[in-house]
Structures are given as C-alpha cells and as structure tokens.
Image (cartoon, rainbow, N blue to C red; front, side, top):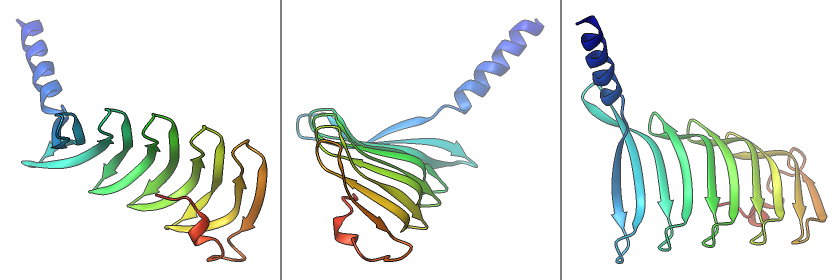
Length: 151
C-alpha cells in the first residue's frame, strides 16, 4: 500500500512540474513558426523557453527565459541549419561571450557584452577563419556598431 501511495505522489509531482508546449504560430504549410514552453506557478503560466523555426523546420532561434526575460545561452541558425550566432543573456540583456559565424561555419565575430554594451577586445575573421581586425570597445565603444553582425 505504501508503494502505491508513493508511486501516486511521484506521478502527481511529475505531471505538475511538466512544461506546457504551446505552438504560438504556424506557417501556411502547417509547420510550427514559434513554439513556447511554459510551467505553471501560482495558477498562471510562466514562460520558460522559446524556439522559432524556419518554414523548412530548421531551428531559427532558441533560448531560455527567467521572469519573462531572456536568460542563459541563446542560439540562432541560418536557414540551412548552420549555427549563425550564440550569446549569453542575463535579465534580458546581453552579458558575456558572443560569437557569430559565417554561413560556411567559420567564426566571423567574437567578443564580450556587459549590459547590452560591447566591451573589451572584439575579433573579426574572414570566411576562411583568418583574423582580419581587432577592436577594443573599452577604448572605442561605438566604433563598429554597424559592423557587429548581431541579430
């Protein structure tokens, strides 16, 4: 009897902690465009994660939320499935390392953010992976804002 009760309690806990997947929008062909994941807290749904897709079902953007703000690692891909960029967020702002890639998969740009502002040394590479430029954004904060390749 104790085993059945314990099993029942574990099943209830497992289902109550389950994320709810919601397809927010779809393409005309029926493929998902935006899928969001929620958990229930205090009687309301709280956003945990979001995945956006291209029409061909490849992921476009994916990342986590905390308190309705982007948090943790976010990634973006080109339509062919090649990684485009990845970067860290904290409380909805870019914080930490950021890397962008050329469509061929070679590194394009790498640097650091602090509160949505580029800081420190940023490195820029050509399509073969050769370093072409370095900029210290602590010295020249707005120098290359249009050259970032950010999404």
